[in-house]
Image (tube, rainbow, N blue to C red; front, side, top):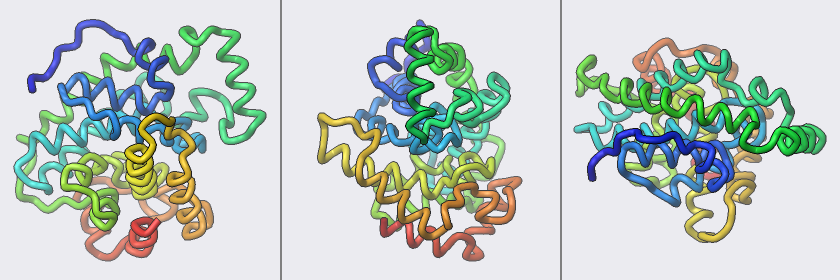
Length: 282
């Protein structure tokens, strides 16, 4: 299938149809690469609101990262190359997003605590008063879309800058592998590594478990929204029990990874092994 070329910006229209920022950007970037995957895109719904409404990385980033992971899988000759490419492309997305917003976190963009009834209600009232098309998130989606596509393509063109046989490991891919995910699904989530693109923020292993559990739920419930599905909630509960509700990768690992090599070595040395095993059983 041929890749499409960006013709018009219909981000707001798609956002209104899909309902969440995460599904919107998974869909839009998959469409740009010519390979839409409805179930996989719908399974990103729980990542909206900064991952289960917790205010962490914007759902647009999670959705976009999944799309570049899928494209990395198609472009690569082996899993090491694909993992590295997915992480690099995700880093490019983060750079682009941060340049536009000066943050990557939902709570800083919405100025709301969406995890509380009061905060969510306040945000919804504000959005209704502004009009959905004029809301902060809709405007951001429209403004960032061309930049997201450009940065994704730039990141995915980096395969010539590294050895295709150099070992690369993603914590997210390790969780997916242990959960019985397909080879493609293991790479789709690879960019989640190290708190999404090695940024040290909300845990990529957790996001992987949420996404794969949601994907299973979506396939069993094709006509329902996955936004607050019970499988995603169960994965989060298991994670919170294991980590005492600490979600930041840099705190869980007590470091922020400067390179794919650092992250690879950390996982090879047994880093986060207990958490990975626990999430795989969620």
